[in-house]
Length: 409
Image 1 (cartoon, one colour):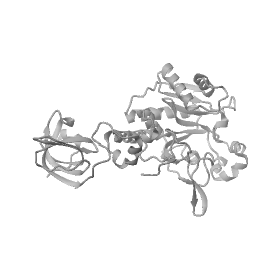
Image 2: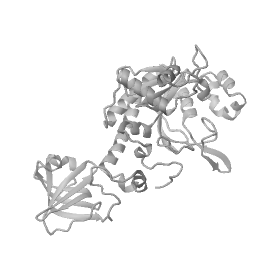
Image 3: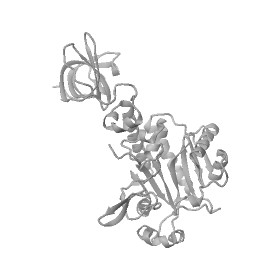
Image 4: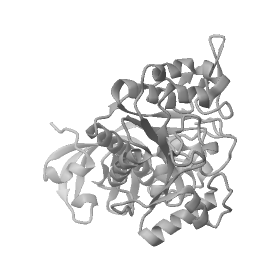
């Protein structure tokens, strides 16, 4: 009795009768033979079908019974000699030709027909790399003694500010979709010392740009008993190195020591005025080009952003409180990660928040009862993939994007 064999496993079963199951990727009908290319989760397999045998349409789901035969020009060096084809599900013609090396469609068509276009091997490989990168994120932090947590995505107060939150009615009370797990991951430092989470965050972004989305996947980590933000950067470096290696889509140039520049130096390198409060995209590109040119690095840390541009929980630079113990990690000229050291003393939060402290009493309770010096970071997964693959738009590396205009599919 035949049993299912994946396309990548044919070489293990020479001359055996097996069952191959998947989608019809392509049909090539010649005068004396038809070649049927079947796609499954492992890749592609070639089936040799004699003339006169009806062959189902592309994207139909089939089970093929046949004998494994060596053929050096077939995918993987083996093919399947037809004995029987069972059609499990017939398909209409797909909106794009999935057998082409690249998807010949613009971004709107790719996204409108994502249910089908995501089947293309090139599109699928991006999200296989995404899964591998997240697995590496988890494995690296697990090895460093972190505990994975799962925090609420409906919250009673805005995390960063009230500007870019999605408001909703929660049984007659106001609530919001969480902008980040920031408050909760800080709280959990008081429980586990080191925590991480991989999950969605929601931003009511009014920007219609190639780098912004209304919801994306955030890879967050927070760790206690640090000396300052440099300890957080050391953990982040290990994580990003592991993620890029696991994704295996493109060689990323990461030296043993990723270059670090202060915000004021970054402005100088970018030719920006010294009183700029933040790095604009063109400034990030300039700093990224400097890091590649001078250090052979696709990555560069910018530390010491102005306190005025960072959230209230950010720890100031002890030597000069105008600047913060925070950082961004730029990847190929674009901000990929934001992180830093947090305030950890209750009195400091009262001073930072003033009258706004009372609504955050649930969050501040952890600090009333003792919290260690701590800090953390957050990686935008889709932006990471876009920089890794060279995608011009973050929507290309998002399964089903949500932005100002798109709520389907």
